[in-house]
Length: 178
Image (cartoon, rainbow, N blue to C red; front, top):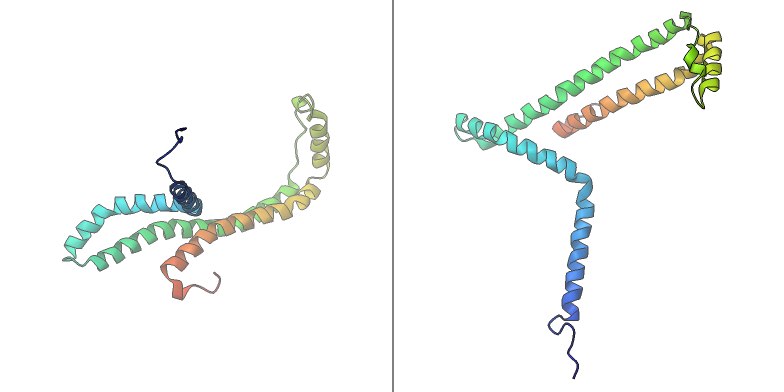
């Protein structure tokens, strides 16, 4: 009689372990995009807990009011800098546009001698420098759409977190622009 290699392990037990492993891997795959946010949520919750307990004691045990005040304070801590950044960026865009118009009267100096000696790109970079030097306003007009697109992208990047913060704090009173 030949001994069985694994006499105490049944096929059903192996199948259950495999299904459990697949279930755990699937859960990890689903949770993975949220791990950063969950980590920050845990950090904020742990760091705000002492303030919450002190505030609850001062408010005579009213935990809901303490929680609302903590959430409001944390929301303002996020919303105010993001809003100021968006406003500053919105104020800066017209200045950048005016600066790009002012650059049309700027004269580009001659290319340094070392530019043409750069390996692989020296000649083409020197020719490009000369073409831009000859027609700087034309070059600025060519890149102006890209500058405007980059400025709008930066403004949108600042406005998106502010809008998300606004919507999460006041979902029923979201502004029409968001």
